Length: 251
Image (cartoon, rainbow, N blue to C red; front, top):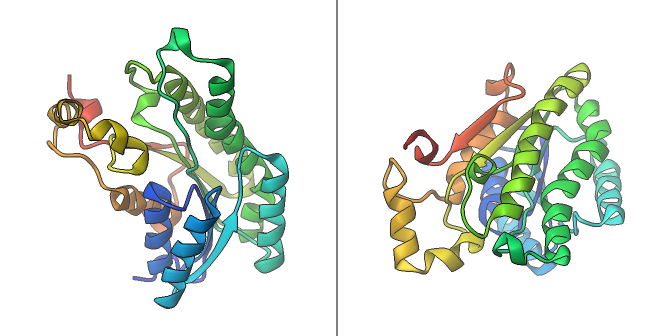
């Protein structure tokens, strides 16, 4: 316990799933955590529950695809703490569509949230990370940045770009004593995946392709993020950690 004692963290996409689980892990380890999400009711409810348990959590209703919202988010954090030790760039969306039918509007939405927002948060959050003296930026990518599945081309393209961005920022941000790493989850049981996982044949196919023969849980991603956020990873930057139950290791 206490691996993030005295630290300040921001988690985007924190109303549910991987983002909420990561925020819960961070708060349980002593961090003051800002929960940011477009789902205002979701982050308010999550924050109330966590604060009642004695943790330090602040909800922020933010659409990371909107530049003015991101600016407001960082102004709020600046006024509250004046620094950020950790940013977890987790917010993401997916629109399932055969590529030949992918509309311009759907592509723009996927790109705005999965890539443009990651760029904006990573760029605009740098001064606060730098002020911490030992900042950690964690981008949540996906195994789909390496793999292809039908109807996920747009999602795969943006997540692959996040992986490349992470490596480039690790080089650039080292001068500011900010480490930059990524996590690539496999198939995790969240609201985003539940639509597909409700179909027994699809769920069985995914489990069969996973070496550990099960799907992942959001907290299992949160605990990897905790490692990257903590001093245990003080010499880790530019890394990608695959958390996929061995799916990517198997033919």
